[in-house]
Image 1 (tube, rainbow, N blue to C red):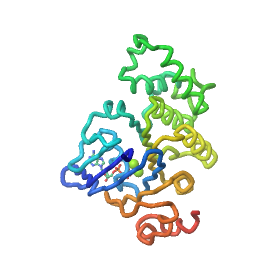
Image 2: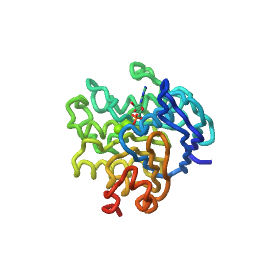
Image 3: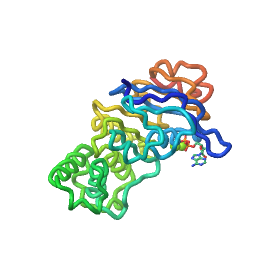
Length: 251
Ligand code: ADP
Ligand code: MG
Ligand code: MG
C-alpha cells in the first residue's frame, strides 16, 4: 500500500473550486515535491491531507486507511505530521519546550499536562534527540522568539518531526532563507527524514530538484503533471504553466 493515496479529491469554498479532482499516489519512503504558482492550492491540499479541512468530495488514504475529514490530532497519531507555511512555534516558550510540544502532541497530551505524563524520561529523551538532529541543542533554552529567522523555520521542522511520524508534510520550509541557510536546511531535512515519506511544497527549484524522487505540478487546483525530475523539467506543459525558462537551468 502507498503511504498516501488521493483519489479525485475536491475542495470548494463557497463557489470557489480550489482543489479540482486531484489524484496522487506517494510510495512509502518517497520524497515527493509539490510545485506550482502562488494560489494553486498547495497549502489547501496539505490542509485536506492533515485534517484541517473536510474534503468536498474524494478520498484520502494514509497507509490504506481513509482519513478524509478525520480530526488533525487523530491523523497525527496515525503517523502523519505537517509543518505550516506561517510558523506555528510558541514564541514565548523555549526551543526545548516547543520541541517537547511536538513529542507530547503525538502521544495525545496537551503541553500543560506534560509533568503528569507517565514516561517522562522517554519524552525528555525524544526531545533531546530531535534537538540534536536539527542542531538546535545549544540554543535549547532560548525563547523561540529570540532565534534568528532561519532557526525559527528549523524549529518548525523539528516540531513537525518530533512525534516520530512516518509521513512528513513540509510547507515551504526554506521560504525567506538565504542561499547558505537553505543549503543547511536541506541537509537537515534530508537527514532528519531519512527513510520516511516526505511531501514538500517548495518554490526554490534548486531544492526541489536536489531533494525530490518525484514531482507533482499543481496549477489552479489540478495536477497537470507528475513524474521524475527529468520528466518534469522536459514537460512543455509544465514549462508553459509554471517553470518557464528556469527549466533550462535545472539538472
Ligand atoms: P498555495 O499554497 O498554492 O499558494 P493556497 O492553498 O493557500 O495556495 O490557496 C489557494 C486558493 O484558495 C487561494 O485563492 C486562496 O485564496 C483560496 N483559499 C484558501 N483557503 C481558503 C479558505 N479557507 N476560504 C476561502 N478561500 C481559500
Ligand atoms: Mg504560496
Ligand atoms: Mg501555500
